Amino acid sequence: MTKETKKAKKANKMKSASNKKQVVTNSYTPLTWEEVFASDQLPPLPTALPKLIETTISQTPPLTRGTVAQVAPVPFSIYARGLRFVYIDNRTRELRMNCLLVAHEGGGKECITPPVKHILAEVKANDKKNRQRLREFNEKYDNAPEGHTPQRPEDLDIRWLHSDITRPRLGQAMEDAQGAFLFLKLNELEDWDKVEGQKGRANSFSIMKLIDDEDNDFGQDRVGSKSVNVDGCLRLNWLADTTEPKLKKYFRYIHGEGPISRITMGGIPEVEIGAPIPVFGNYDKAYDDAIRMFTDNLKKATGTVVCKQAQQMTEKLKSEIDAFTSKSQDAILDTLSHRALVAAFRRACLIYAANGMEWEPEIEYYCRWSMQMDLYLKYKLFADDIREVTNSVKYDKPGPQSLLDRVTVNEQGEFSFDEVVRVYTESGRTPNEKKVRNVLSQWKSRGFVLQMTNDSYKKC
Image (cartoon, rainbow, N blue to C red; front, side, top):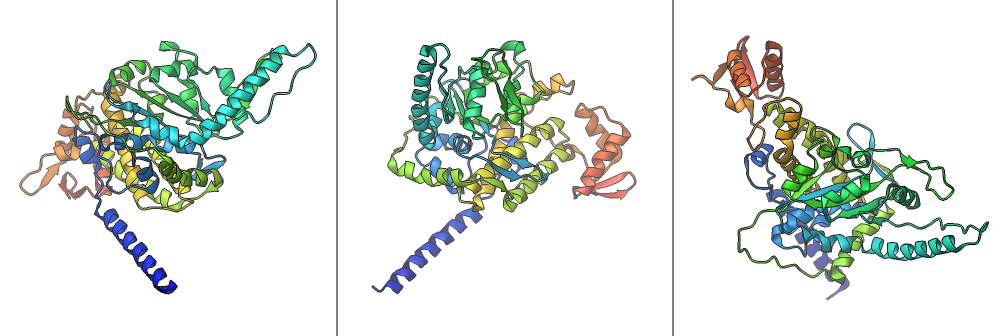
């Protein structure tokens, strides 16, 4: 076989594989927001996934692949340094990320441990060396004679932090990292009390809120010569897990405030009693080699990047969720969706950078699903509590209901202004003419209804 024949054969194979991938991509139909909130099940993972996610979940049992897929971007983000992406509001966003897993007791939350450890193996190995160097320096410092203070090494870069870290140590780790992201994995959500240094009503989750903000200002000033004095931008990405009762209890004092909207949530599907034990694959050298391509690309990526595809995806997702909230007129979902949209954008940009600044159509499928998973859980767990705090109406329904779907039409398919007032009132809202006219105006502008007369409308 000649070299030309071999090249042609190889090209045909690549073309065939590309065509197969295209068929899979085109065959996947994402769930609509109506379908997501009408279901009592977690949104299923897309059948077409970006390579980074596909690789990460390759050794995960089928039941928990969605769980690992939601978590995966967080450990990968630790490798980025000095990387920003331009958001649709023309401001830049760093790859600030977190994920909180919510499941029943014994629900299999440990499924994320192997992939996280393998993704961050390089970080962990570097930390081990630097922790030893730090111990040696501390011993020298404590035993140094008076007037002979040893110089602290400037490159003690320890990224994977322990949950019992103090604020001074967190500040020092921030300074040592020199603009890179720190990582925190909590075995229980309640361990966040140790990070904040507060618990119960005293815990305002100031650090949790701070680390989601771009160009935040974190630091402390102390008087003593041995005290840590730092000032800078805190970059801390984290993972935690909990159960639904513990989650509700932990955040019971801050419903309607910032922490909940800043968290990206993931879940684990329930299984029947007596179900078989999930079987894991092999997290071996082949797995590590496949992951290394993505981490190497992230280490090389830097600067401010404009990813047009990620911006277009974000505009599309915003249009979809806005159309749904417009029909449901649910202010809680609308509020929660703002930061969820930013989180989806950040995930898209991370995968784009991990691909060597190359876009995949499957990124959009994954990010839509990730945002749907996040908002489905937040709404299910917190919507009623947030309404109660804000003196709004309490619903016991699983998701927002479309007011337009509840409007009754006559034989001609038309309905009146008074019919919208009736539905508005039955939904628990206090109607006035201005509010109802505004709702009808939104429906008209989005093409949901046609205005027939001054007081008559028709569903499209």
